Amino acid sequence: MKAYYELVDEIQRDVERLREESGGVPCPSDCFSCCRNTSTMAISEVEARDLKVGLDALPAELRTHIHQKAERSIKKLKAHGYDAEDIMPDAGMKAIEVVKGTPEGECPMLIGGVCSVYEHRPVICRVWGYPIQNSNELACCHKTFIGKRRQFRPLNYTRYWRVCQDLSRELGATQKTPNCYLVSQLLSE
Image 1: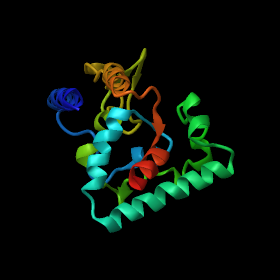
Image 2: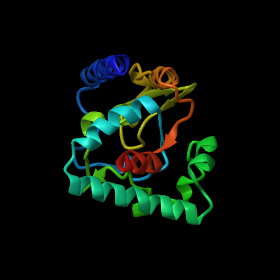
Image 3: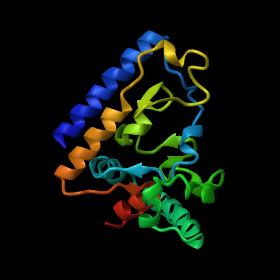
Image 4: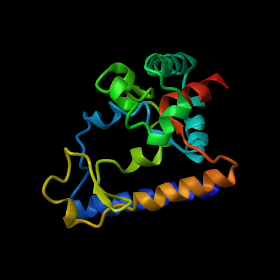
């Protein structure tokens, strides 16, 4: 996990650099739109292990609420023929259409508009809102950096994700897990 925490520190330095270059935090404190349709988002094993630390630190009542939320998402996905293995080949992009815009599409760890595991959130959650390099594409929240995304050196999400995958392979994990299934699994352990 040491290498993962070093990556998280690197990401934080890169985010701070971009904040300084751009003049601040791009997202309003009351916006959590990016968390609305992430119940099928892929999470690597190394991120899952850190997420487990955050979930375990929560009060039992909150863990139960998060678990129930994840289970509701899973139930809706299963009703439409999806399970964890069916979702990952398309990284959840087709499956999210089943729950998009519904409470079941929301990240299970989003409680009252706040991330309950903020210090342990996955890598994409740490960088979204800023311009990111994702493979050959420049990606960014549609609400931020409007008209000026190309003015800044983007965060290298492609590299961050590759490091997570490499570290996960070193831990013996070869596949990523959809958010709601992972959270349910972590809270069932």
